[in-house]
Length: 98
Image (cartoon, rainbow, N blue to C red; front, side):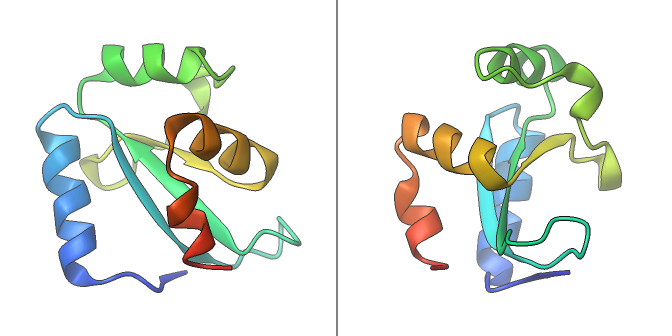
């Protein structure tokens, strides 16, 4: 379940993904399978080669790509989310939800 974002933020992320850009979308997220994780960051890009190469630099595997809704993306949470968002200069997105 995603919440804590605006329709405008979601639409912007979708546009960037469709345009072949690496796009970040962080929102509140609750999933009993991942206790202690309150957020998820979706990092998407419609150019699969670009997305795979982006993920490799952080040790993300191609098979971890989520193909839902025609917006291929990695779901980042837990230590992956924090470490990657820090390196990408997007910790402000996580702080928004803490």
